[in-house]
Every structure is written in structure tokens, then in C-alpha cells.
Length: 500
Ligand SMILES: *Cc1c(COP(=O)(O)O)cnc(C)c1O
Image 1 (cartoon, rainbow, N blue to C red):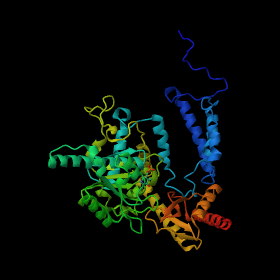
Image 2: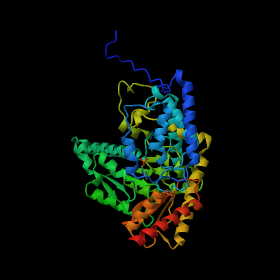
Image 3: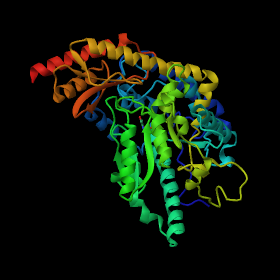
Image 4: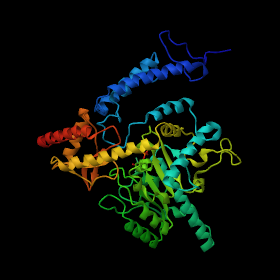
């Protein structure tokens, strides 16, 4: 008999038109209607967006979101969607808009967006075979395909991850554990006494250029090596690691009794799009028997480029590679992978749980190779993209934005209101300054541009001074979209400079 603690939900008020709570057999028709309805509303927005952003300040958006009473639901899904329109979509940042020129965000491949609704609805988790079935093989085929494009050979393997940050962490974890294992074995053979892993961690060193991604330093911290474990190898005037300096740095490290655990080469630095010389770096890493990780989070699109694949020459010698499909493969966030030369190295993250992936199991369980357990079937998006558009179309789109960066650099270099802040990028960034303006003017001109909604650009520092940055990842953007944004920036810069 039910008492006062009746667990049954209260009946809905009569004015409420909620869709069914869960997606299932009974609600299949409601699912179809709901998704079609949302797609219709979003399609209207995509068609109507006339600027990349409204330029809303945090203080404009925070109060309305804070005021929502999450314990008191609205009358219908329509109401909730309308509210989200107010709280989020009206002031969203639209990466597909041709005046969005700021960060490494891409417009997304349409087949991938469709696939996203599939993986959300089916809700496959690619951790074990018994939660994913064919999903496991689809992910594995894409890993094999990527490894083949890299040129890694028959023992290659890998796993999808949440992003480049996780891929880099995972790669450096494998490098760390390979180095530790080798050291412990060597010590036992040479000294005849056991050594504990934690005792050698402080001696491990990683090597990266000053322009490598900050996730490398973060990984060093998370892996118990400390930030100081990352030795900065000088770069040349094109922001690429200097191989001779790498060789010297590894030598010095050895002389000090320290242990080089990994070289991190960047194939497409976030700021400059510079690609470290992978061939020469690979030779040095091999000569010193040091793990080579290539962070191709940005430059991975070169794997399918018909014009610029040559920039990645030498990547085939890597022990591990980070690829961010959600950057230069035009995939929705998240979609990334870590690829390794030798599948055996993935054992360092394997743990067998009785309830999930017992050691005596005979089926493929992706969780054996992953830092994550429950994991999205992001691979389906790339699969649908390759099966619909094909790799050449993806590579052509990346080639187009690289060409556009060159055209834009030329335009800026010849206009006296601007000065270029770096040589032409190997990929698709453009760094420049307003001629004669200081850091403060740059900061305020950039803010004024964003607030006006006329365009969005990024900012970084080059040789200690602020520089503005365009990151071009929209193949539908042309120079005629970029020039008005630059003109507006010059205007803002002039006004800010005069009022200072
Ligand atoms: C973007 C980027 C990362 C980090 O990737 P996330 O997907 O943002 O985690 C790592 N390395 C490079 C070179 C990048 O450009």
C-alpha cells in the first residue's frame, strides 16, 4: 500500500504539452516530430544569421541564466526551446559565418551533423563490444585508415578521444611509461637492485618548441613530471623547431643524468600554423632512442590534402600522433584521435575490470586502449563524412583555407594601415598589427570589432607584443569577406588611438 511517500509523479497540469520523457518504442513518432521541429527552427536561424556574434558581455547574459528556476519546468518543450533561444542562441558565436576569423573552429560537415543525431539517439558507448557492436569496428576502421594515411605500418592502432588535449596527455602517458619501464629494466640488469617507478619520474624530460600547445605542459604536470620537465627547444624565424638545437638539448639532458622521454613535434602550431621539420626531428629522436610524438591537432587535414601533404613528410616515423578531426576535418566537437605506431604500447592504459572487460574476454573492447570508460561514438561522424563527401573533398576544403591565408597575408602586407607580424603561414593563420599602434590600441580595437558584430579575430603575442590573428577554417569565406573586417579594425584602431 502506498503511504504519504508516494513515489508516483504528480499528474501534469492540464496546460502542459510535454513530449514523452524517454526515447523508445512508444515515442518513436514523437522523436521524429521533435527532431524535425528543432531542425526547422535551427535552419531558420542558420539562414538568418547576419553576423558571427552579437558581442554580448558576460554581464548581459549571466543574470538571465542565473534567474532560471531549474526546479520548476516550463509548460512545454516549445517553451523551453524558446527560452534557450533567448538565453543562448540569440548571442551564440556562429563559426559558419564568413566574418568569424578568430580561433580554430570550423563550420561543420553536414553529414557529420546528421550522424551526431544518430549517435545521440542510439547512445552507443564505444567502451566495450557488448555496448557498441558494429560501432567498435567502425571506429577501428577509421583508426586504421588514419594510420595508413600517416604511413605507420601494420602494428598501428589507436582510439578516438575527446580532443587534442586528451590525445596529447594519452600519448605522453605512453611515452612516460615506456621510458620508466626501460629504465627499471636497465637498472635491474646493471645494478641488480630494484628501483621504483616514482623514483625515476623527476628525471624524465620532454622536448617541445616554444610554440607547442600548452596541453603539453599541462600533461607533464598531470603525469607527475612537473612543468619543468618540458625543455623548450628554440625555433627558427618561421616558428619551427630547430633540429640541431633539439639534438643539443637531448645531449645536455643525458650528460646531466636526466632521461629524455619524448620529443613533441607540432604539425601546425596553434598560433602560426608552422610545421616542425618532422623528417630531421624523427632522425634525431631515433638516434637517441626517444619517443616521437607528433601533435597534428591542427595540421591533420594535410593527411587528405592533394596540394600540401608533403608538409607532413616524416610523420610516418612518429611513435604517436594526435589528430583533431574537429579542426581541419570539419567535424563537430568532439572528434579527435590518438594513433600509435605499436599497438602494444597501449597496454599502459589497460585495466581489466571483472564487470566490464575481463582479461579472459575474446571480444574487442576499446576501453582497453582508452583513458575514458563510457565514450561517445564520435567516429560515426567522420565515417558519414568520408562515405558521403570522400577524403578529397575534405582535403580540398583545407587547401582552400590555406590558400586564402596566403591571399590575406599579401593583402595585409601591401596596405600601409597594417603590418604583418609573422611570415606567411604554412597552414591557415595570419598574424598582423595595426601600423604604429601599441598593445592597448590593439586590445580595444579588437573588443570594439567584436562588440559591433562586424567580425571576430583573435589576439596573441608575438615577440612580447600583442598581434591580431586570423585563423581561417571556413572554405566558403573569401578575401571579400575578410577585407571589410580588416577595414573595420583599422577604423576602430584609428578612433581608439585618437581618443587615447
Ligand atoms: C587545438 C590544439 C590542441 C588541443 O586540442 P583540443 O581539441 O582543443 O583539446 C593541441 N595541440 C594543438 C597544436 C592545437 O592546435
